[in-house]
Image: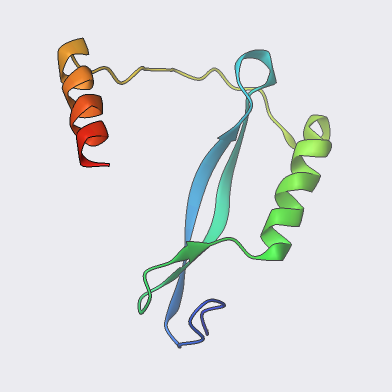
Length: 92
């Protein structure tokens, strides 16, 4: 399959899970096909996939199954975050 961006052969399809919204409006869509080019390294969604995601979001009551979801937050020490922001600002 050819890459839509660089037009080279060698695109692989892998499946991913994405979340849309938050709280009571959270919707998780599984098995979304993502195109990844082994030549240029880009990953992208096709127009068909984007349309299907929008259709699922619009008609979520018809497609979604309610499941409990565990949520964990990623945390880093506050001083490490400040150092990282400060060093990025100095480099810019």
